[in-house]
Image 1 (cartoon, helix red, strand yellow):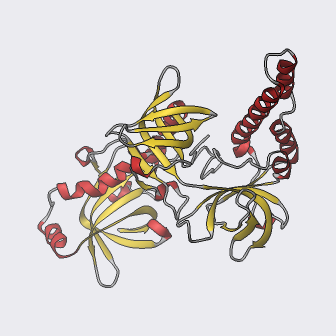
Image 2 (cartoon, rainbow, N blue to C red; image 1 turned 90 degrees about the horizontal axis):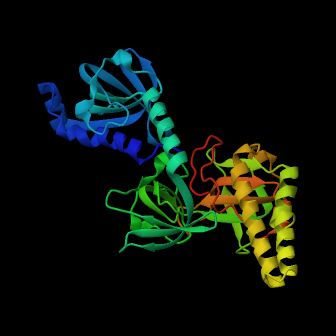
Image 3 (cartoon, helix red, strand yellow; image 1 turned 90 degrees about the vertical axis):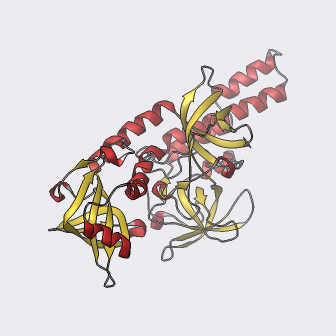
Length: 388
Protein backbone atom coordinates (compact mmCIF):
# COMPACT_ATOMS: atom_id res chain seq x y z
CA UNK A 1 0.00 0.00 0.00
CA UNK A 2 1.37 3.47 -0.70
CA UNK A 3 2.00 5.93 2.09
CA UNK A 4 -1.31 6.39 3.87
CA UNK A 5 -3.11 9.55 4.89
CA UNK A 6 -1.31 9.53 8.24
CA UNK A 7 2.07 9.95 6.57
CA UNK A 8 0.74 12.38 4.00
CA UNK A 9 -0.67 14.39 6.86
CA UNK A 10 2.84 14.80 8.23
CA UNK A 11 3.87 16.63 5.09
CA UNK A 12 0.83 18.87 5.36
CA UNK A 13 1.66 19.59 8.98
CA UNK A 14 5.11 20.65 7.86
CA UNK A 15 3.44 23.45 5.94
CA UNK A 16 0.48 24.27 8.17
CA UNK A 17 2.38 24.37 11.44
CA UNK A 18 4.88 26.90 10.19
CA UNK A 19 2.53 29.78 10.89
CA UNK A 20 2.46 28.72 14.53
CA UNK A 21 6.23 28.96 14.99
CA UNK A 22 7.78 32.26 16.13
CA UNK A 23 10.44 33.91 13.94
CA UNK A 24 14.00 33.08 14.89
CA UNK A 25 15.56 36.33 13.72
CA UNK A 26 14.56 39.84 12.73
CA UNK A 27 15.73 39.14 9.19
CA UNK A 28 13.41 36.16 8.91
CA UNK A 29 10.47 38.19 10.21
CA UNK A 30 11.16 40.90 7.65
CA UNK A 31 11.36 38.30 4.88
CA UNK A 32 8.00 36.87 5.90
CA UNK A 33 6.42 40.33 5.73
CA UNK A 34 7.97 41.18 2.36
CA UNK A 35 7.78 38.01 0.33
CA UNK A 36 7.05 34.87 2.34
CA UNK A 37 7.36 31.79 0.12
CA UNK A 38 7.91 28.08 0.37
CA UNK A 39 9.01 25.14 -1.71
CA UNK A 40 8.32 21.50 -1.02
CA UNK A 41 9.94 18.58 -2.80
CA UNK A 42 12.48 15.77 -2.84
CA UNK A 43 16.17 16.57 -2.67
CA UNK A 44 17.81 15.65 -5.97
CA UNK A 45 21.24 17.22 -5.47
CA UNK A 46 23.26 19.07 -2.84
CA UNK A 47 26.10 21.46 -3.62
CA UNK A 48 27.45 23.40 -0.68
CA UNK A 49 24.51 25.36 0.73
CA UNK A 50 22.42 24.86 -2.42
CA UNK A 51 19.64 22.28 -2.60
CA UNK A 52 18.09 21.17 -5.88
CA UNK A 53 14.55 19.88 -5.39
CA UNK A 54 12.18 17.92 -7.58
CA UNK A 55 8.76 19.41 -6.89
CA UNK A 56 5.21 18.53 -7.91
CA UNK A 57 4.87 17.94 -11.63
CA UNK A 58 8.51 16.94 -12.01
CA UNK A 59 9.91 20.48 -12.19
CA UNK A 60 13.17 21.32 -10.45
CA UNK A 61 14.09 24.31 -8.30
CA UNK A 62 17.36 25.30 -6.64
CA UNK A 63 17.42 27.02 -3.28
CA UNK A 64 20.19 28.46 -1.15
CA UNK A 65 20.00 27.67 2.55
CA UNK A 66 20.88 30.72 4.64
CA UNK A 67 23.78 30.39 7.08
CA UNK A 68 21.51 31.00 10.08
CA UNK A 69 18.63 28.90 8.73
CA UNK A 70 16.84 26.63 11.17
CA UNK A 71 16.90 23.01 10.01
CA UNK A 72 14.53 20.62 11.75
CA UNK A 73 13.98 16.89 11.35
CA UNK A 74 10.42 15.62 11.74
CA UNK A 75 10.34 12.13 13.25
CA UNK A 76 8.24 9.30 11.73
CA UNK A 77 4.64 9.43 12.91
CA UNK A 78 4.98 12.93 14.36
CA UNK A 79 2.29 15.50 13.53
CA UNK A 80 3.68 18.26 15.76
CA UNK A 81 6.69 20.37 14.84
CA UNK A 82 7.35 20.88 18.55
CA UNK A 83 8.83 17.39 18.54
CA UNK A 84 11.12 18.12 15.58
CA UNK A 85 14.85 17.83 16.29
CA UNK A 86 17.40 20.51 15.29
CA UNK A 87 19.95 19.23 12.75
CA UNK A 88 22.50 20.70 10.35
CA UNK A 89 22.60 20.94 6.59
CA UNK A 90 25.11 18.07 6.60
CA UNK A 91 22.28 15.77 7.76
CA UNK A 92 20.28 16.41 4.58
CA UNK A 93 20.77 13.80 1.83
CA UNK A 94 19.48 13.16 -1.65
CA UNK A 95 16.10 11.46 -1.59
CA UNK A 96 14.98 13.28 1.55
CA UNK A 97 11.72 15.20 1.58
CA UNK A 98 11.97 18.87 2.60
CA UNK A 99 9.81 21.92 3.05
CA UNK A 100 11.68 25.20 2.64
CA UNK A 101 10.36 28.57 3.74
CA UNK A 102 12.04 31.82 2.87
CA UNK A 103 12.09 34.39 0.11
CA UNK A 104 11.79 34.17 -3.67
CA UNK A 105 13.64 36.79 -5.70
CA UNK A 106 12.61 38.21 -9.06
CA UNK A 107 15.48 36.39 -10.76
CA UNK A 108 13.95 33.08 -9.68
CA UNK A 109 16.42 32.36 -6.87
CA UNK A 110 15.17 31.17 -3.48
CA UNK A 111 16.75 31.83 -0.07
CA UNK A 112 15.60 29.35 2.58
CA UNK A 113 15.35 30.60 6.16
CA UNK A 114 13.90 27.36 7.50
CA UNK A 115 14.18 23.73 6.39
CA UNK A 116 11.78 21.05 7.65
CA UNK A 117 13.15 17.61 6.84
CA UNK A 118 11.65 14.14 6.52
CA UNK A 119 14.45 11.62 5.98
CA UNK A 120 13.92 9.14 3.16
CA UNK A 121 14.89 6.36 5.56
CA UNK A 122 12.20 7.51 7.99
CA UNK A 123 9.64 7.61 5.18
CA UNK A 124 10.63 4.10 4.07
CA UNK A 125 10.38 2.80 7.62
CA UNK A 126 6.99 4.40 8.08
CA UNK A 127 5.82 3.03 4.75
CA UNK A 128 6.83 -0.50 5.73
CA UNK A 129 4.93 -0.20 8.99
CA UNK A 130 1.84 1.08 7.23
CA UNK A 131 2.05 -1.55 4.51
CA UNK A 132 2.08 -4.22 7.22
CA UNK A 133 -0.93 -2.58 8.87
CA UNK A 134 -2.83 -2.47 5.56
CA UNK A 135 -2.00 -6.12 4.93
CA UNK A 136 -3.37 -7.01 8.35
CA UNK A 137 -6.38 -4.67 8.64
CA UNK A 138 -7.00 -3.51 5.09
CA UNK A 139 -9.79 -4.54 2.73
CA UNK A 140 -11.05 -3.46 -0.65
CA UNK A 141 -14.12 -3.60 -2.81
CA UNK A 142 -16.59 -1.93 -5.12
CA UNK A 143 -19.02 0.64 -3.69
CA UNK A 144 -22.63 -0.54 -3.82
CA UNK A 145 -24.36 2.15 -1.75
CA UNK A 146 -23.58 5.24 0.33
CA UNK A 147 -25.69 6.52 3.23
CA UNK A 148 -24.25 9.91 4.19
CA UNK A 149 -26.79 10.45 6.97
CA UNK A 150 -25.84 7.19 8.66
CA UNK A 151 -22.18 7.56 7.72
CA UNK A 152 -22.01 4.12 6.13
CA UNK A 153 -20.77 2.69 2.87
CA UNK A 154 -21.76 -0.72 1.52
CA UNK A 155 -19.17 -2.46 -0.63
CA UNK A 156 -18.86 -5.79 -2.36
CA UNK A 157 -15.62 -7.41 -1.27
CA UNK A 158 -14.78 -10.84 -2.66
CA UNK A 159 -18.44 -11.43 -3.51
CA UNK A 160 -19.57 -10.48 -0.01
CA UNK A 161 -21.44 -7.38 1.15
CA UNK A 162 -19.52 -5.46 3.81
CA UNK A 163 -20.65 -2.31 5.66
CA UNK A 164 -18.07 0.39 6.34
CA UNK A 165 -18.87 2.52 9.37
CA UNK A 166 -17.31 5.98 9.26
CA UNK A 167 -16.90 8.63 11.94
CA UNK A 168 -15.68 12.24 12.12
CA UNK A 169 -12.19 10.79 12.59
CA UNK A 170 -12.28 8.78 9.35
CA UNK A 171 -9.77 10.12 6.84
CA UNK A 172 -10.77 10.19 3.17
CA UNK A 173 -8.50 10.39 0.14
CA UNK A 174 -9.68 10.62 -3.45
CA UNK A 175 -7.64 9.67 -6.49
CA UNK A 176 -7.25 12.66 -8.78
CA UNK A 177 -9.19 12.24 -12.02
CA UNK A 178 -6.23 13.38 -14.07
CA UNK A 179 -3.61 11.33 -12.25
CA UNK A 180 -3.09 7.69 -11.36
CA UNK A 181 -0.38 8.47 -8.79
CA UNK A 182 -1.22 7.93 -5.15
CA UNK A 183 0.80 10.98 -4.12
CA UNK A 184 -1.51 13.10 -6.28
CA UNK A 185 -4.58 11.90 -4.38
CA UNK A 186 -6.45 14.70 -2.65
CA UNK A 187 -8.41 14.96 0.56
CA UNK A 188 -11.92 13.67 -0.01
CA UNK A 189 -15.29 13.29 1.69
CA UNK A 190 -17.87 10.60 2.23
CA UNK A 191 -20.26 12.45 -0.09
CA UNK A 192 -17.85 11.99 -3.01
CA UNK A 193 -18.22 8.21 -2.98
CA UNK A 194 -20.50 6.85 -5.70
CA UNK A 195 -21.76 3.35 -6.56
CA UNK A 196 -19.22 1.65 -8.79
CA UNK A 197 -16.22 3.38 -7.20
CA UNK A 198 -13.29 1.25 -6.15
CA UNK A 199 -11.86 1.75 -2.70
CA UNK A 200 -9.50 0.49 -0.05
CA UNK A 201 -10.34 0.77 3.63
CA UNK A 202 -8.24 0.44 6.76
CA UNK A 203 -9.95 -0.42 10.02
CA UNK A 204 -10.96 -3.04 12.54
CA UNK A 205 -13.32 -5.74 11.27
CA UNK A 206 -16.22 -7.15 13.23
CA UNK A 207 -15.93 -10.75 14.38
CA UNK A 208 -18.17 -11.96 11.56
CA UNK A 209 -16.41 -9.77 8.99
CA UNK A 210 -19.70 -8.10 7.98
CA UNK A 211 -18.61 -4.60 9.01
CA UNK A 212 -15.48 -2.50 9.34
CA UNK A 213 -14.92 0.57 11.53
CA UNK A 214 -13.18 2.72 8.92
CA UNK A 215 -10.10 4.72 9.87
CA UNK A 216 -8.97 5.54 6.33
CA UNK A 217 -10.74 5.24 2.99
CA UNK A 218 -8.98 5.74 -0.34
CA UNK A 219 -11.31 5.76 -3.35
CA UNK A 220 -11.55 6.57 -7.01
CA UNK A 221 -13.76 6.25 -10.06
CA UNK A 222 -12.27 4.02 -12.72
CA UNK A 223 -13.42 2.64 -16.05
CA UNK A 224 -13.21 -1.06 -16.86
CA UNK A 225 -12.60 -1.67 -20.57
CA UNK A 226 -12.02 -4.78 -22.64
CA UNK A 227 -11.86 -5.52 -26.34
CA UNK A 228 -9.66 -5.90 -29.40
CA UNK A 229 -7.05 -3.27 -30.20
CA UNK A 230 -7.91 -1.50 -33.47
CA UNK A 231 -5.06 1.04 -33.49
CA UNK A 232 -1.74 1.69 -31.75
CA UNK A 233 -0.07 5.10 -31.91
CA UNK A 234 3.26 4.57 -30.17
CA UNK A 235 4.34 8.16 -30.84
CA UNK A 236 1.31 9.59 -29.06
CA UNK A 237 1.27 6.79 -26.50
CA UNK A 238 -2.30 5.78 -27.33
CA UNK A 239 -4.25 2.59 -27.88
CA UNK A 240 -7.70 2.50 -29.51
CA UNK A 241 -10.20 -0.32 -29.00
CA UNK A 242 -13.91 -1.08 -29.22
CA UNK A 243 -15.16 -1.71 -25.70
CA UNK A 244 -17.14 -4.95 -25.50
CA UNK A 245 -19.54 -3.62 -22.86
CA UNK A 246 -20.48 -0.27 -24.38
CA UNK A 247 -19.69 -1.04 -28.05
CA UNK A 248 -18.00 2.37 -28.19
CA UNK A 249 -14.63 3.21 -29.69
CA UNK A 250 -12.33 4.31 -26.85
CA UNK A 251 -8.89 5.90 -27.05
CA UNK A 252 -6.67 5.11 -24.07
CA UNK A 253 -3.61 7.15 -23.15
CA UNK A 254 -0.64 5.08 -21.98
CA UNK A 255 1.81 6.98 -19.76
CA UNK A 256 5.03 6.12 -17.95
CA UNK A 257 2.90 5.39 -14.88
CA UNK A 258 0.64 2.93 -16.71
CA UNK A 259 1.40 -0.72 -15.97
CA UNK A 260 1.13 -3.14 -18.89
CA UNK A 261 1.26 -6.85 -18.14
CA UNK A 262 0.97 -9.95 -20.29
CA UNK A 263 -1.17 -12.94 -19.31
CA UNK A 264 0.82 -16.14 -20.03
CA UNK A 265 -0.98 -18.58 -22.31
CA UNK A 266 -1.05 -21.42 -19.78
CA UNK A 267 -2.58 -19.16 -17.14
CA UNK A 268 -5.10 -17.77 -19.63
CA UNK A 269 -6.20 -21.30 -20.54
CA UNK A 270 -6.55 -22.32 -16.90
CA UNK A 271 -8.51 -19.21 -15.91
CA UNK A 272 -10.76 -19.49 -18.96
CA UNK A 273 -11.64 -23.04 -17.95
CA UNK A 274 -12.56 -21.85 -14.47
CA UNK A 275 -14.64 -19.01 -15.90
CA UNK A 276 -16.61 -21.51 -17.98
CA UNK A 277 -17.38 -23.49 -14.82
CA UNK A 278 -15.20 -26.44 -15.70
CA UNK A 279 -13.54 -28.61 -13.09
CA UNK A 280 -14.61 -29.26 -9.52
CA UNK A 281 -17.09 -26.40 -9.32
CA UNK A 282 -19.04 -27.60 -12.34
CA UNK A 283 -18.95 -31.21 -11.24
CA UNK A 284 -20.20 -30.32 -7.78
CA UNK A 285 -23.12 -28.39 -9.21
CA UNK A 286 -24.01 -31.23 -11.55
CA UNK A 287 -23.91 -33.79 -8.73
CA UNK A 288 -26.19 -31.61 -6.62
CA UNK A 289 -28.68 -31.37 -9.46
CA UNK A 290 -28.74 -35.14 -9.96
CA UNK A 291 -29.38 -35.73 -6.28
CA UNK A 292 -32.39 -33.45 -6.40
CA UNK A 293 -30.93 -30.93 -3.99
CA UNK A 294 -31.12 -28.16 -6.61
CA UNK A 295 -33.02 -27.43 -9.76
CA UNK A 296 -30.66 -28.26 -12.69
CA UNK A 297 -30.74 -24.69 -14.01
CA UNK A 298 -30.07 -23.25 -10.56
CA UNK A 299 -27.17 -25.67 -10.08
CA UNK A 300 -25.64 -24.74 -13.41
CA UNK A 301 -26.05 -21.02 -12.77
CA UNK A 302 -24.59 -21.29 -9.26
CA UNK A 303 -21.64 -23.32 -10.48
CA UNK A 304 -20.97 -20.81 -13.24
CA UNK A 305 -21.10 -17.86 -10.85
CA UNK A 306 -18.77 -19.58 -8.39
CA UNK A 307 -16.37 -20.46 -11.19
CA UNK A 308 -16.35 -16.95 -12.54
CA UNK A 309 -15.73 -15.50 -9.08
CA UNK A 310 -12.98 -18.03 -8.48
CA UNK A 311 -11.35 -17.13 -11.78
CA UNK A 312 -11.55 -13.41 -11.01
CA UNK A 313 -10.11 -13.89 -7.52
CA UNK A 314 -7.25 -16.00 -8.87
CA UNK A 315 -6.57 -13.42 -11.56
CA UNK A 316 -6.32 -10.62 -8.97
CA UNK A 317 -3.90 -12.61 -6.85
CA UNK A 318 -1.75 -13.60 -9.82
CA UNK A 319 -1.61 -10.16 -11.47
CA UNK A 320 1.64 -8.93 -9.86
CA UNK A 321 3.41 -12.11 -11.02
CA UNK A 322 2.62 -11.61 -14.71
CA UNK A 323 5.48 -10.27 -16.83
CA UNK A 324 5.45 -6.59 -17.77
CA UNK A 325 5.65 -5.40 -21.36
CA UNK A 326 5.85 -2.16 -23.30
CA UNK A 327 3.37 -0.39 -25.54
CA UNK A 328 5.50 -1.43 -28.52
CA UNK A 329 4.90 -5.10 -27.61
CA UNK A 330 1.13 -4.81 -28.15
CA UNK A 331 -0.37 -5.74 -31.52
CA UNK A 332 -3.41 -4.59 -33.45
CA UNK A 333 -6.09 -7.26 -33.13
CA UNK A 334 -4.88 -8.38 -29.72
CA UNK A 335 -7.34 -8.52 -26.83
CA UNK A 336 -6.79 -6.43 -23.71
CA UNK A 337 -8.47 -5.66 -20.40
CA UNK A 338 -7.89 -2.19 -18.98
CA UNK A 339 -8.55 -0.22 -15.81
CA UNK A 340 -8.48 3.48 -16.69
CA UNK A 341 -9.00 6.85 -15.05
CA UNK A 342 -10.80 9.75 -16.71
CA UNK A 343 -10.42 13.43 -15.73
CA UNK A 344 -13.74 14.39 -17.32
CA UNK A 345 -16.46 11.99 -18.54
CA UNK A 346 -16.85 14.14 -21.65
CA UNK A 347 -13.14 14.55 -22.37
CA UNK A 348 -11.33 11.60 -23.94
CA UNK A 349 -8.86 10.00 -23.94
CA UNK A 350 -8.88 8.09 -20.69
CA UNK A 351 -5.59 7.17 -19.00
CA UNK A 352 -4.57 3.53 -18.52
CA UNK A 353 -3.82 2.50 -14.96
CA UNK A 354 -3.43 -1.23 -15.56
CA UNK A 355 -3.56 -3.04 -18.92
CA UNK A 356 -3.46 -6.80 -19.43
CA UNK A 357 -2.83 -8.37 -22.82
CA UNK A 358 -3.16 -12.00 -23.90
CA UNK A 359 -6.72 -12.24 -22.57
CA UNK A 360 -8.38 -13.72 -25.68
CA UNK A 361 -9.29 -17.01 -23.92
CA UNK A 362 -10.85 -15.12 -21.01
CA UNK A 363 -12.99 -12.86 -23.18
CA UNK A 364 -14.12 -15.87 -25.21
CA UNK A 365 -15.09 -17.78 -22.06
CA UNK A 366 -16.60 -14.80 -20.21
CA UNK A 367 -17.11 -11.64 -22.31
CA UNK A 368 -18.44 -9.80 -19.26
CA UNK A 369 -15.22 -10.26 -17.31
CA UNK A 370 -13.26 -7.06 -16.62
CA UNK A 371 -10.57 -5.75 -14.31
CA UNK A 372 -13.00 -4.51 -11.66
CA UNK A 373 -11.46 -5.27 -8.30
CA UNK A 374 -7.91 -5.35 -9.58
CA UNK A 375 -4.92 -3.44 -8.26
CA UNK A 376 -5.21 0.16 -9.36
CA UNK A 377 -1.77 1.65 -9.75
CA UNK A 378 -0.25 -1.83 -9.54
CA UNK A 379 3.51 -1.56 -9.37
CA UNK A 380 4.30 -5.16 -8.68
CA UNK A 381 5.38 -4.28 -5.16
CA UNK A 382 2.10 -4.24 -3.37
CA UNK A 383 1.45 -0.57 -3.96
CA UNK A 384 -1.75 1.00 -5.09
CA UNK A 385 -4.22 -1.65 -4.14
CA UNK A 386 -7.66 -0.17 -4.43
CA UNK A 387 -9.90 -3.19 -4.58
CA UNK A 388 -9.35 -6.88 -4.38
